[in-house]
Length: 189
Image (cartoon, rainbow, N blue to C red; front, top):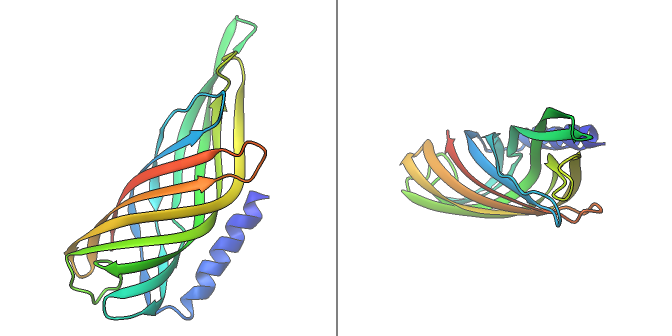
């Protein structure tokens, strides 16, 4: 199911390329935390790659569509009848398709402002392993889709490069109704 979402997101991002005025991308680190009642919340640090296409630009602002994908390895352990411990290393994936309003630095490659900000909404997919607090004997994979909000600040190094500090929140619409928070830092070019 999530493969369809990822492929659709990529196709939508690529279709925007035909109308895009500017392609921008960034790479950085992202701290992701998933809140589930009754389960351990362990922060996961991952790599974030953030491609985006600007489809509407003004002198100091723009609208972009982007897919900031975070990947990380997350570990859980299973204790089988108190005898053996099995460590599971699984993939954490966070992939929201976002539409952002950008102002100032980083809004487009011509803007010479030293400071900027962005905010946006979208819809995302998230999957992450977690362990049961009560038994420590089971590891689960939570995955789901949901609405996403993100915001952040940008500080320009020059008109073509900037540092971005971002925050995002996703509410999963699956049975868990989990909350997914992330805080990241990205170098954009």
